Length: 563
Image 1 (cartoon, one colour):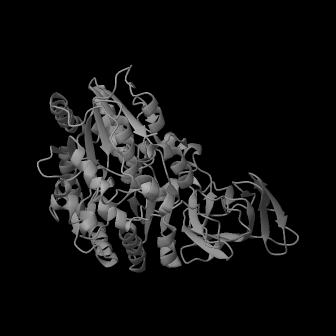
Image 2: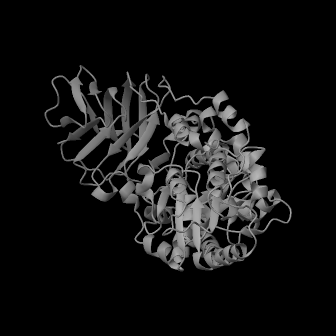
Image 3: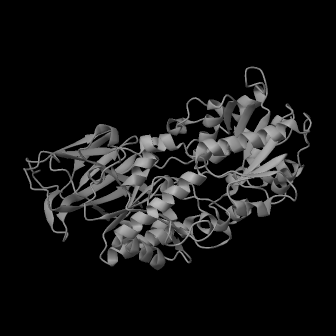
């Protein structure tokens, strides 16, 4: 059987952790699979399923016989979003395939809650055309049972939960990453949130961040390590005292996610019991459970199948106070938490095992393939309003502005393969002086420190940095002096040059990646260090406008109407 999975995003989207394993497992079972995406870009470095071909929408339309001259028998469209819908209509005008549409969220709630702008029209599900697209499908799959509420009456359906290759999961999760790698003191608790901010989950993430701040105020030192896209709007609402406990590490290799999860003391999935969270299954929960992590999650979606206090702890309001309370309970009762984690592990491995889930999916496909086709190979009519809708809202690029955040990163001696992963990162706004503090326990062989004060060309002012004890008193400090301190070497790296002043250091960068390296300080006992503090300022930053929405619309313009 030839199966084409049609994705709405790039390689870093959470949905790829669902599509990729199924595509690879079905291929291992002897079937031809491929993944089709709007465009192929450098996020491919995060793609973990090299045996499964990937192709762009344009390539698929030019080569409908993509499986050794044969077309796909099954088109599995991942969500009914507008760019997926338009592409499927185009391709179905060329081939007689069966159409399956997958739902992983309440798409209409996502449209209301998500961070969107006029240039993102294609990334949403249209309130009228989306339901019509579902009506014309041969069948629908849903990530969770509650989403069956959104399926047309009597439509063939399958509950398709995320599939996890348990052998792969066990292999890549050992050995785990270490606290030393991240410079986190042993007395600190660690939470991990492997996922991006999508806009739709903004309130849930804000509550989690506030809960981490509350844990620290209550005397339970705790750091949250987060992957994926950060959300500047959330950060602006947090106090500096709370922000210092949030560690953003960006996108990381898929094989590192299980290692990162094992580093955590417990897994937390925030979420109010509302119409958004009821119709979803957060992608991190299956791995939390299958790895035997103590789990705290919302009482809706997967929480409806879990038993509070037996295989998880459930959140009924998901307020910062409730999240912090549940975390403290987990931390304080190790034996009970271990028992819940083991029961959660049994639950996860029963429901998310890739092989039996793939066998069910294959049987579903086979039954569809044997039945009559709903859609003949013809060019379907396109709604007249499609082009006018796009033209009425031309996409606008993000323009540089005073509040455009820049990212400071601090690197320190570590294993070279983990240097980027373990760097200390914080976003801040230009035109204002900021002092950023990081929970940090450096290695005793700390003989150099590299500070990247921003990622854009411009001028950056570095005023001081210091390694501090638990009570924030400095043990090792640097600030520029006149004449310069001969015991500390300072030099620029990347595309930057230094201009020393009386009390500051200006870093002038004509390109990206400005760096300052420090080394050569006197031998110092670092065993009591618990903080790193950096005071910087960004000036005259040349932010390159993000024109991706405009470029994407131009790229997909020929998908709007038959030419």
